[in-house]
Length: 95
Image (cartoon, rainbow, N blue to C red; front, top):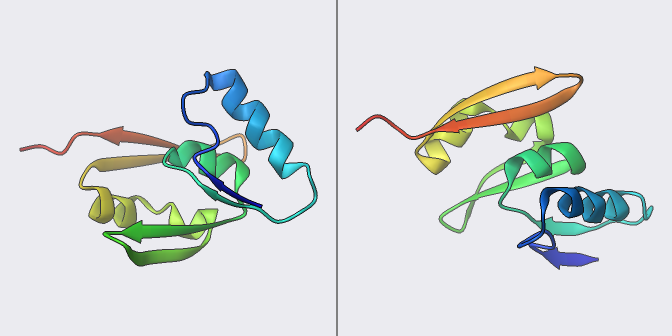
């Protein structure tokens, strides 16, 4: 199944319901997500693009590296590993 931003414009509860439903289907899905915290929670593998080129591909743990994300997005990133889940905090870069 291919899905482009299936959680766009949904409230937080419904974002999680949709992605939980997808992850429970037992089939493979390719999902475009801009919310990296949702990707961290529901995806097994991530492909990170930077200006249309592959910046990284791998497990959630491998791809959601703060230094990598900072270089791609141009913002400061802090990663918290809590309750066996990755949580990302984003801060505007200092000018």
